[in-house]
Length: 391
Image (cartoon, rainbow, N blue to C red; front, top):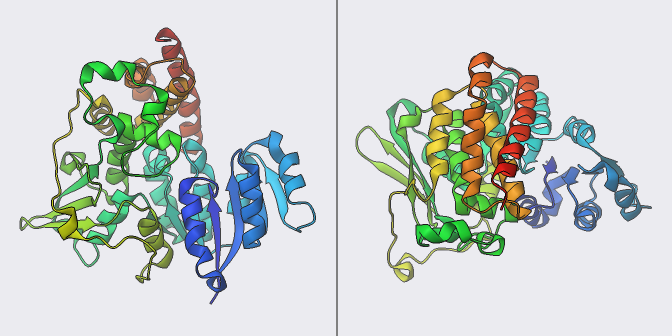
């Protein structure tokens, strides 16, 4: 049976790897919707290659360019946030949510109404609105499969296991570009240096988030939201080789580890073919050649984002929305050369502290409108904090 698939964030690294897998079995899939941002040439080329029904750019001003690129193909072109949500309404059996940032929440949330399978690579959805997302999936009988390599690893380690027997979950981190830098050198780290990951081939934003450990901080919160485990039982372990992606510890003392190459096609392919395991074009590890695997505890002086994430989990409610929005705005400022590398964590912490009153007043319950409002408020506050720390 041919499966109808949509890919939100098709021009990014996750989207391109997903298309790579689909291209290897073209008779098994029919592409419904592809979405992207500013890479119109790539978006149009992929839409034509895979015969998509519709291609959507999130930028309204690029609609003309997209229409020109798709002229004569019969493929519909659309643009803007509302078009993304409308594309998520198109019937599909499997939907990849790989839009980077809070912008991925609305289309992913809408896609769940189909009662379909949502492959979730957009960690911000769980960070900002985890309880809402999981409740919506349950309401419509939809399935959410994790695509982050760490959470896919945990998911796989739990197959056939009782969650009540889980004592702890350990997610690993490579440590990013600056794991071995002297602490005193971090404030002077350049954009180019932060944009180069030692193990993974990823987009610029997530690569910088890896260097600052903000990516792992989001994944801490994501682990709590997806697996429902107490934050005190979630650990982070620095593992420079990036071969063990996560471990699950059980009450009998056993640790179940997921080992694999640093290739996102494994997690994507697992979600694409679940519950089956299919052949994937990834490296087969030679453990004898690798020789050894190393681990060390994370240094929160080097990566204050980890401490902030635990404070966010303790606060709960809309704190995740503030954390993510402030992180995104601080990252924008670093990429633009407005603030230094270590200033990003300062901006996020100051934003959380500055909005503590609003978070307390919001209470524990919230809806998508409240998430959007808090996201807007946090971006404004983080922008002001970034200006105070301008380089």
